[in-house]
Length: 159
Image (cartoon, rainbow, N blue to C red; front, side):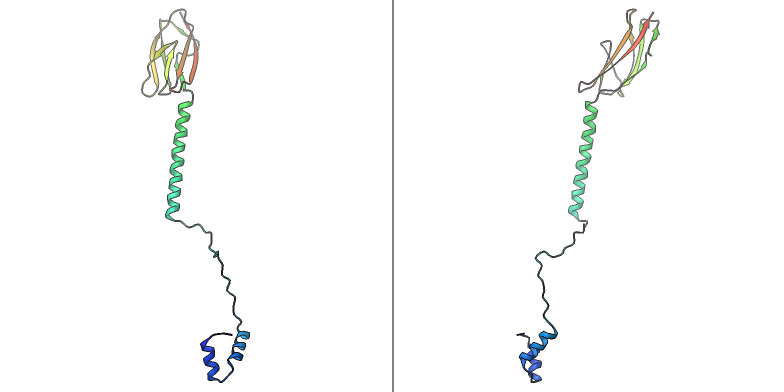
């Protein structure tokens, strides 16, 4: 039985049976069943929030730092570059000195026939090296800080 004062008041004023009035009301307007959903339908739409901004910022920063460290690690572990400009292959030397020039990685140590060569701040070198008539090869050796070695040999003729 419905417990609605409005329906009771109308039934009393019209001198109708309250039970019949309630029955007609239930027949014409059945009660709607309201399903109570313990998990309301909340859309999974992505919304921009300060948390999301912070998370993206942190992830970006971590990726940048890891990329930088990876690049520096590769630089540290790879063999040094060694470019020899002078002397050229099979060059004939008429003096007791030969001009040595070229470039390498800035932090490498360069030796030519076991004689150390000084580098400028850009990794370039340009010097004179004493040779004898017995010298037929110049062995260029660049050693990086990590111990990686690059060697090149240039054949020369001393007259």
